[in-house]
Amino acid sequence: MTTGCKTTTIFLTILCGLVLTIVGLTEQWPTWAWPPLAVILVAAPAAAFKIAGLRRGSVPVSFEEHLTAAPIERTEHQVSRVALPSRWADYDFLISATVRWYALDAARHSQVLNPAGLAVESVLDRARVITEQREPGRVSLVQHELSGSLSSLLPDSTGQLQAMAEDVRLTLHEHDQERLDSLAGVRKDQAVWEHQRKYEQSKRKYLSEDVLKDTGSAVVWWLAKNDEKVERTVEDLGLLARLTSAANDTDVPERLRGLIPQPREEEDGQVPSDRQAARFGRVPTAADHVADALNALDLEDADTQLRLLAKQIADVMRDQEQHETADDLVRRFDPSAAFAPDDGEPPDSPGSASRPTSGI
Image (tube, rainbow, N blue to C red; front, top):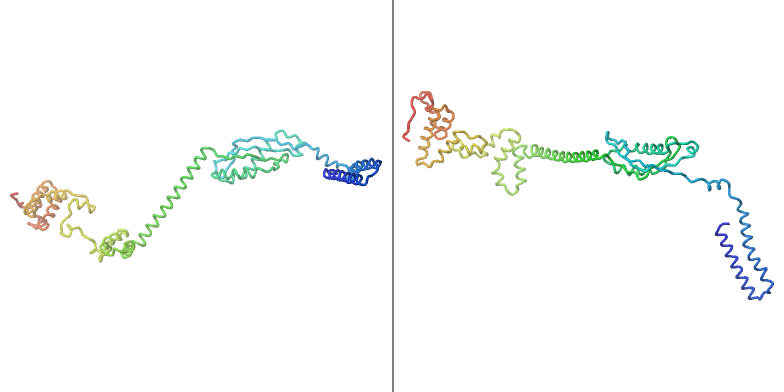
């Protein structure tokens, strides 16, 4: 009989005793009737307990043995920073954990001298199967994966015990972590550079194959950029023609050369001075410097005086064997007389019969 049944039986017995007592007092039972009533109330629950005990029978032997069986003996062992291979060569994971195990029935009959070694070997084998397939850059994720995989008790390869691991911690060598961080930074920089390079290539392709394919395409593009400045676009036609020719490494077409503005000095038939030469990408010469100095003089009847001065300076240059500079200087101030024939030779050459003199 269970505890609940016993409690119910006692409660019903007390309740019946109270009912009978009330009835006896109401009906005024004789005095001799109360002792038999008390005996019946006490004997009834005792008889019920006895009958329930006989019906239950004895406890099975196997159940008694199970109740008296010795509790499972579990032990543990600490492992710290044990190297496990990763997917990358020379980058090892370092695992630390608490290894727990208990011996199986077969191991109790055969004495195992070092059960901790078997348990640690079993746990590390299970961990290595996972780590050798994982990249070292995901160390925190691999740690959680190992915590779940090693949390269950599984038998070792010998079948003598079952082992598991708790408090799994996974790290890398400090130098390996620094190298991985550096490699990650380089990969990110390389990705940015690659995007920039592709952007520049796309931009160059757009300019060369679309915008600057020819002068007409450049004009349309310029109009799209300056849709309210048609007059300015017309003024810049020469610039666009030169830009298109330079982009395609070709000469400006003959029909567009008239649109290219010419330097003022070249329109007048004069050679640019040193400042203008530098502006047009030419290194100034000695003749450029002398021409600038002469042009800086404030002379009356400047054309005649400058022509005579240039002639005299050119004569001095020829005496110093600087004939090209002398010819260039004369050509600047008197182009018509630079190569005037005189007995088949230029009048200013060293072989001239005479040199004009000047009172200046």
